[in-house]
Image (cartoon, rainbow, N blue to C red):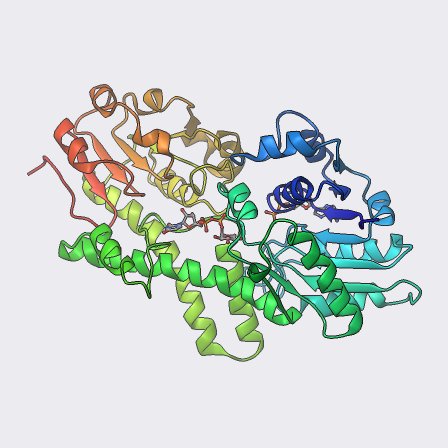
Length: 457
Ligand code: UDX
Ligand code: ADP
């Protein structure tokens, strides 16, 4: 009998990952549980709680066959042998390490619940991104009080990116499994490797010790984010000197040692992972007294904030130092294309700064509009939403592109220009659009890291 799998936490990580395991391992029974009943109801409906290309099809194929969604966490624990934990671990907002360390309360509640309910041995797999050495803490919580049940804790970080989650899960660059160097540890690692080996070539499945696995996840995200901040720092220099950041990216990306990915300048990185994981790394470094290392990584986040502020400063400067009373059409609210997720989206900070300048902000986005009221609750009187980008731009003084949705590239900008107030400005925060064509249409065009094309002087 193949072992039953449970996943605690039906979010962006747990849902798609379990759907892929269910698809590739039809002989295993997989249950995904969450305390959020609305989320579970959505997973059981035709309107899944998250938008991810290709996810609907995978869920439709497996749900009710070997993939189940439920709110009964206790029953799930009792009936499973392998438990993935993918509850949220946001940045702490209170107490020691606030704004930096991970808030582990949900994670610890889960560990305690597993201990309370388990009646047989379990392999517990950390899927959520966690600070290094969390597995020790988990092992301690799990083994406190009881001795008859054995828990083996593994680290198996998820590297999927939103918008491409299904592709990333189907063809991962690597799968990382960290485990203890004991007979039980090695056996548990083998169990988990066996699951992934159903579709991932063995040479892409790496096994390491637990700490290396935990730290590799933080390091991967820190490196990726650092590349984005590095190119954004160069974009500032390009704007000052007349170089073109996209040309620089292309030139450096052809160096096989650097490579072409994650060097696209823009309004800065967003998403639930990059900032959180770097701050986690900073906190770890500080905990060990490594102040230089902490400052180095903190700089990556600081530059990201600066890039967003810079984008708004440029809007202000170009529009005669005021946007008060002006209508700004914000094209994009999600933190990247092909997702409805807005966690840490640069568009939030940008919209807020524009509201502080008393602009009237109209947000359009193909998937993320439901999040606007929550994310911009503090400036609700200045913000409206409009699903149709043409209507959003009607009567606007400027368009600010904040998400790289393909649909924005395919719009009729002659029609949009005709409906806007003049002079019409376009600030392309993602270097998504054809700026020469926009300039010919009549727009004053400001792309990131490039000289502006304007009709003003
Ligand atoms: C990231 C990691 O890529 C993934 O491996 C990890 O599991 C979770 O965190 P995600 O946050 O979903 O994934 O998206 P990602 O594609 O990494 O983009 C993050 C942010 O960086 C987005 O806001 C994106 O627009 C921005 N970005 C990315 C750039 O501005 N320029 C780039 O060249 C690449
Ligand atoms: P991620 O992007 O890491 O997947 P999400 O916030 O999308 O994060 O998902 C985490 C999920 O974990 C949420 O749906 C939340 O309700 C769930 N969760 C948090 N604590 C618990 C818990 N103790 N038991 C079950 N589910 C939990």
